[in-house]
Length: 262
Ligand SMILES: [Fe+2]
Ligand SMILES: [Fe+2]
Image (cartoon, rainbow, N blue to C red; front, side, top):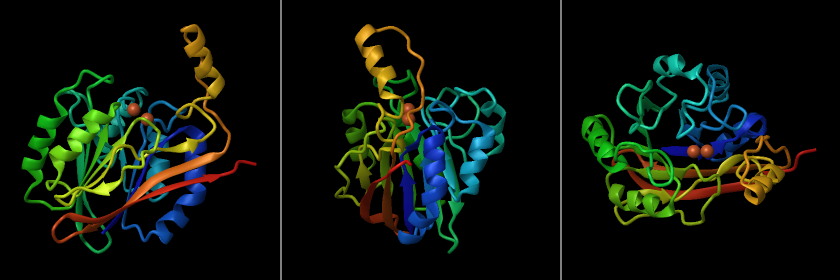
């Protein structure tokens, strides 16, 4: 089974470039399942029901998220009814939505997608390591094909999670930093790993936001209006090839290209 995993889709530029390029990327990579992180898809922060529907209509099977999942209030009811939109599973009990989803591809092979969030320099959440242990215990009879979006800030927490999950899941893909790392590999136990898959959005920006806004923020330490940048579109993703019979990864390959804006 081939899984295409797209980095955080950032605002309108991210959505527009995906609409244009996604069919080609799916075809070229023979993707059976498409996963995208959608936590920045609405104006660069959060996600709305309408925008989530647009992503699903584009051919994205599962939308994962992160620390911005609850930024738009409209999503609270929607996420309860839409199992293909995930919250990080280690948000406190009582928060709306689910942290994993199990589905079948066109050839009837099952895949579980799990979303968890780190807690170093990000949110004060439940332990992601213990949380994923509980989920893996719950789903172990369902399918060996398991892809994890670990949404976290620091590389050490992500690398540690990769080793913790090695041999227990098919892939761990890091999200949140919007900067693609070049450390993709298959760990010894057969888990595909990358510290961060990157972003789908404006390249000439600071993680999606207009660069002038962020430089000003660093210079003056005063609140700034964040505007979504518009220049040159960047697509960051990985394609993971998984042996669906045993849930081990054969290959992980990075996608990283720029489409110039006119
Ligand atoms: Fe993000
Ligand atoms: Fe994030």
